[in-house]
Image 1 (cartoon, one colour):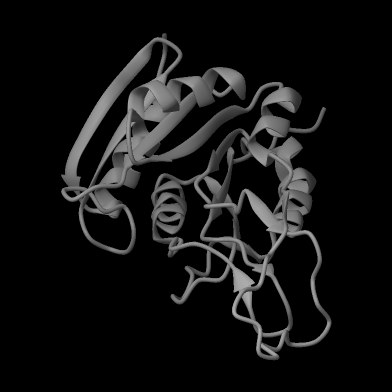
Image 2: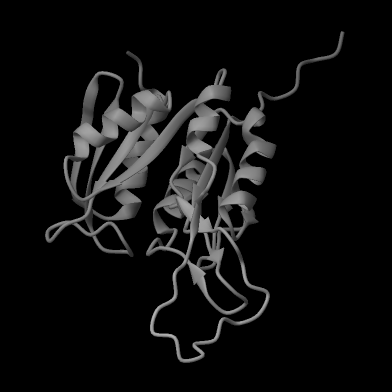
Length: 220
């Protein structure tokens, strides 16, 4: 009888950053996400001896060598990569700011003004990756993100229930809270019964540390 090998590390699958949806060869639709939150979550998981797969849009910082990094551009590419690795994950944190819409038609050439004062851009809805994962999940702990300008708890809970999430992190955009970049921000961690933790005026590294410990250690 052969001896059993060491227990395999549990796997974190994390998404980070924006997606980029092209309009023509030089223009695109995107958002203000920097990817810093998802990256800090990946670092927190590495420090706790988990294996990490980080699927990210364009970011401007260097990634830790222990992280399995997969760079994508569009929402469609992110969906493809996430589905490729979802079955092997134990914890899935969808922190990326995936564009809800993309141009229905991408021009092969740069769009010229040609004297026109207006240009109408028709948009098409992207696939809802988070909802698809909620329908597919088996043993995975699935965590989503919500970015709100109003009613953060109500809107986040609606998203958690409709997409069959285990947890959701609600960010609030306002005068006193800016979730973009490296500055401090306020978040709410919600579960199926409501608000589980409030994290106020904290750096993303501290937020990531608290979220990682809570998610991996939570028992109802």
